[in-house]
Length: 62
Length: 132
Figure 1: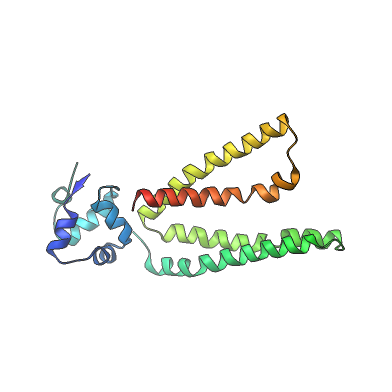
Figure 2 (figure 1 turned 135 degrees about the horizontal axis):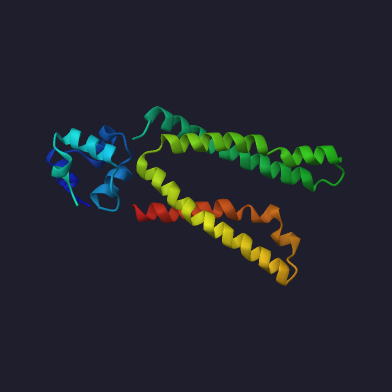
């Protein structure tokens, strides 16, 4: 699943570890989502959307 | 999502419980090498690793419960590798036992069980590599 996570994170100057801490997951999880190796669950996608102040479909696209 | 305090707790106690279990296992193996022990002591020595293993299992389940969703998937994929490979090993050993005489010095339970965690660790390494 394509996503804008890396771009959004860079805009806020957050490291993967920063985002992982805020989302309550490991840095490996954020990296796996960014590299499209792992599709997050709906609750995690909602959490990420809330952290960026966006809707899920603005971050993830099928 | 992870539970940070539970994850820290599990992270601390998991290696300790695993170490204690392995230590008790090798202690039991060493004690059972002694020939002049009575049958009661031999059985007690053989059961020595059970309690530390129960603690290890408790902390391992705690580790899984505290893990985030990717870590849980990694463990699931490790199981998906380890379980069928274990079945294959046991099935093959069973058939080989029918076909020929397997040496119990090499293929008894005391040797074969160690393959199971090895398969699990192999499955973990494969799954972790996939999500790196």
